[in-house]
Length: 242
Ligand SMILES: Nc1ncnc2c1ncn2[C@@H]1O[C@H](COP(=O)(O)OP(=O)(O)OP(=O)(O)O)[C@@H](O)[C@H]1O
Ligand SMILES: [Mg+2]
Image (tube, rainbow, N blue to C red; front, top):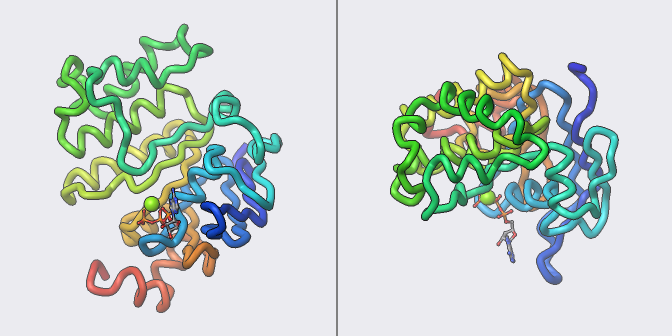
């Protein structure tokens, strides 16, 4: 149902040893939304995304997904609830082909839809179909990003977590990736939680956004509100797009 809370992060604290990287973070993602999390290097964006996926674990607070408390759940069980992730740096399998990488993303529960799901990925990213037998490690950065997202989609996620999909990519490829995310959201109602350094692109794409500074969420609003916010503009958009 549109509008219901799918992911609810409440008061989450995550530590690396004695160092606290998240200081009581509150974030919600509703069914059908694209939510963007922006912030500077080291703010804790990836830590939040990884904490949602169970590693590292929250030391305080709760994370609820579709009514299930997943705060202490092992990652493989979280994945079975149909959260899928394209992590920072893409992390595809470099020695496996495009096809094999996609196979790795399909969960055992989904094998009966396998052929259909592969076709869906190929229609979203035709470039991958052309490179079906090529090893992941020899793909361009943009193609690797497409493969990373495609592999996550093979799990038929209810929530897709994307960590910096635009990192290091040329503007044209960034546009293709963002268009694909928009299309998945529009046509399939896929809910997306997106971490981005590219604040302009992410906030344009997003229904709502959050700003993170030093492990705290300092601002939130609709994508439009944040794009128009003078503090956001000064900190994340100056010198870029207007
Ligand atoms: N494995 C780790 N061990 C120790 N400290 C870590 C580890 N991973 C991250 N940190 C620290 O936690 C803080 C938050 O890092 P995180 O990677 O979440 O930031 P980020 O917002 O994703 O940054 P970026 O935009 O550069 O990817 C940083 O100070 C970082 O040095
Ligand atoms: Mg990061």
